[in-house]
Amino acid sequence: MKNILKILSLLFVVILGVTACNDDDSDGGTPSIQYVRPTDAAASDSLLVSASMGQTIAIIGKDLQGVVSVYFNDQQAKLNPNFVTSHSIVVTVPGSIPDEVTNTITLNTSSGKSLVYNFTTKITPPKIKSVSCEWAKDAAEITIYGSYFFPTANGDIKVLFPGNLQAEVLEFTDEYITAVVPNGTMKGYITVTNDYGTERTSFVFRDDADIFIDGENPTAWNSWGLSDFASENGISGSYVNFEGTTGSWAWPANAIQLLYINPNAQPLVSEGDASDYVLKFECYCHEWHDTPMLIWFDNDGSHNVDGSNAQYHWKPYNNNGVSENYVTDDWITVVMPISDFIYSKDESEADRAITSLGELQNLNIMWFGAVNESTTEFGLKMWIDNVRLVNSKE
Image (cartoon, rainbow, N blue to C red; front, side, top):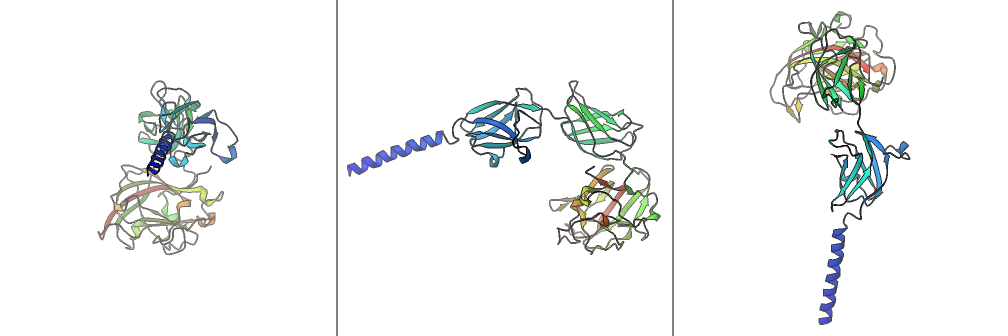
């Protein structure tokens, strides 16, 4: 019996020792970095000594499984544990300006071990994603959205509108700039400049080349006599005025429908792939409580909401299944990628697609479909103008 107790005691001591060793080395040995490379498979043979903000990289080394934080200079990166293994870490370089530039990567483990590796973070030039309104009037406030809008050494940032006109900047952060459109602004590109470079918009400000509905001459395309038109407080002359009431599967009045029949009886665009295009228009919404806006193209002018055409369903009032009155404070630009035209009328199908330019001939709009609320009728008032198809890949 004594021998058995001695053996059990010895085993207990051994188990405790092994457990203690495992606890001490749960994150392996001291991490080491062999090299850093791009995550792009085509460029995986290239080694990196620097990377730009927002760039995703792969850190290759040993004993990396215990790493719980990664810093570039003094800026902590977002680390996904699923992308951390014993031999690699996939991480995106943070997009914030460091307070102290050390040109290093620092790895920290759960057991308090650290590794510092020489690596340069390149500050990225401004990147423009969009603006609040591509047809904003002179003297109007406009918001430019994007990233890396870092201040210059003087604490400012420069915005130029077409005609080389410098805008008054009212406020800015890393992700947006609020500025005033200068008087005399023409059609063209907007640029943003700081100490790290210059970026221009990918789109043309006040682009009129691709407009097919502007409200100025509706008799040329509005043979069905749908929609109403007005000009008071317009963004660029007359506009389509949708005003009335909507309800659950209630057939909309003519005033809140639109059928554009192309007078040329041919596709609106002739180059590129259909999926390269976006439908754009300026919108001023005064009231919209519920009921989706259905948008679709056809090439037969049938205005058939029950047809097989791929539809876009716009529901900006929908907040996680709860309807809230959607209002814009002014004119804004709305962008609808053609690749997002996927629905049938009741959304029982969500895999439709516009696959050819030949389908992009006539435009249909109506408020129709299911609603979130039990109210029988909802007020609607929306203006749209400058409807256009734009190739987003150019």
